[in-house]
Image 1: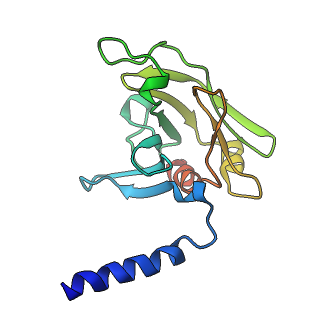
Image 2: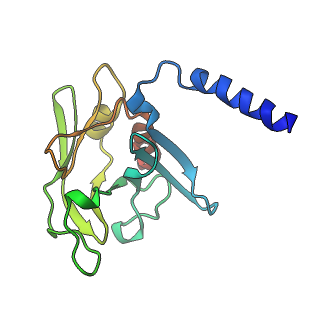
Length: 174
């Protein structure tokens, strides 16, 4: 029992130090080099404010897009999981409408747009990792905004989004 309390005390004490210098939005991001299964498939995820669900999941492009879902294939697939009450779902579990407005990343007056399509219970967009995209995703003085179909029409304010930038560097063709 003493070990459990000691472990909890260390965790509670260390948590603020781990988050030092990061905004609340930055704390909603996670980056992983591998999946829980152990397969190598880097990903960056933006979680809801209470960390209970994934809002955005970015991975390296998978086989159907000319990549293997691993590092160095030249592209990113962005999956957006809209809140079901704000988006209608048909009887087969597909989001409606079948075509969503394009996604876009925006930071400091620069914007990169890419098409979005519905895939079962997520909205998905694919984009190539280019020098322009890397320059836009690179953390700087302005926070990143991600425009996706949202009830209020506002962008997702996602902080510096360093894990997304790291993923773009990882997915870039060497």
